[in-house]
Length: 331
Image: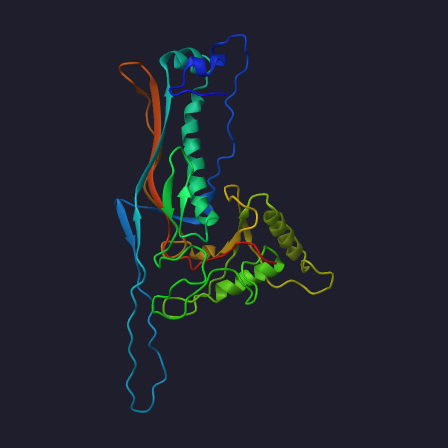
């Protein structure tokens, strides 16, 4: 059915048709904000926020007799700039439609759909960082207007990469899941082992051990990967090893599942060390103004009813060392 802006009687004449007894506002009931499980929310008060760091120090060593104590200094980390972006939406309803349609049918709750729409939008755009994990930028088409989102960290490298730069110029670190032979492994028991291995090999800015230990699987909700993640977890809970009939027990593995319906493909997956979610590592949501629903406005000339909802935020990552990712392309 066609719609109209502003919303008028011609667009939904059923609302004023008294021969129709029941009219329902239909909208997804589950408004869980999925992004909250994997993003760090950072309320900010400035339009432009710059995120930087310094590394650990690598100086301690054995000293020969009468030798000098070695000295070293931290390295400056990579800078990431988050510039607040304005997001908003409006509901416009003509005076007759509001008076004889919306109020008569007690459908004023449609106004809350503005906030639901905003939350769906936010979940979509924040999930698209994961959906475009190997891209340095992409066109975001959620909402009525598209824009370009840069999908790199402070090192200028894509979210999933084998070429993340180390601050001291040492060997690059990689967060693309591999067992040492096969890269971008599909989700499986062996893939989980590879994810743990990949994370443990990630080093800090001067090559120090970070001991990254991912404990949450990220998959598309109700995808084969989601189902397999539950099957593997349940098998391990019984003390059995998945994919084998022998009596060997599983390796010591437990995890939670982040099943996100806004992930756009079945195959890609990842793991995250939730203990490291914070301002230093991982996905960031810099929020200048929380989502709010503005009071009703009556346009003076036409008496049109207007509601708006809006928010300021920017999102992305500077340092993704707590997350390992795979396209799921290889067994």
